[in-house]
Amino acid sequence: MTEQHIIPEASTLKGWRKSSYSGGNEGDCLEVLDDQPHGLPVRDSKAPQGPALVFGRSAWSSFVSAVREAGLG
Image 1 (cartoon, rainbow, N blue to C red):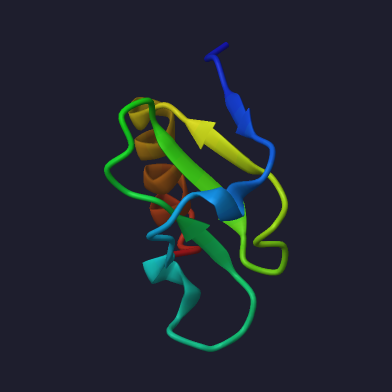
Image 2: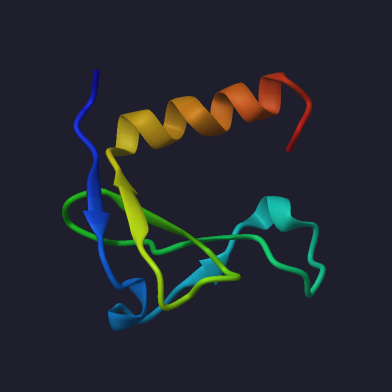
């Protein structure tokens, strides 16, 4: 199992972007924060003040690959 970290209040970080898999709509979706030294923070755009999960690069890459293979992205 890989280690995962939590950022309790994700709004303290700047530079969030909506996932390219969101379809470009203005609805709620997943947001990611690039260029972080300890992994890739991910948060729910409906709760920008809430927590973010930080995934290792390889774990995130595996997740994205699985979504693509499943035809979900």
